[in-house]
Image 1 (cartoon, rainbow, N blue to C red):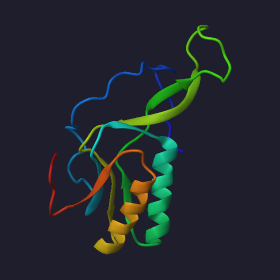
Image 2: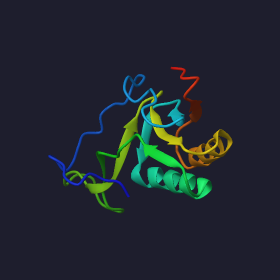
Image 3: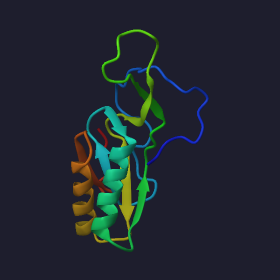
Length: 140
């Protein structure tokens, strides 16, 4: 699973994730892309599950690019622990995404096969998404 090799600080504030994306909203590599329609966070496990779904469906010959990286640590306190006594340990890493951001790009296979693979990947993700073709390139 994806996670940073090294971080300056072990724990981060939660922060806020509002507004539309300004970066990562255009094609950089592939011909079809999976684009988010809402803000949220995607865990490294979800990113990996969607990647596996795509690669298993297209089998061979496809190029896949993951456009997000889970750099933000999320902490969790153990079950049945009283309040206080500091912040919990790092539980997982998430990628905060904004609406309009590309998650995956794919090329090297037919459009029909790529669409069905990206649709399978969208089922693994917690956010609403849509499939964008390079020729359309609409923005939210």
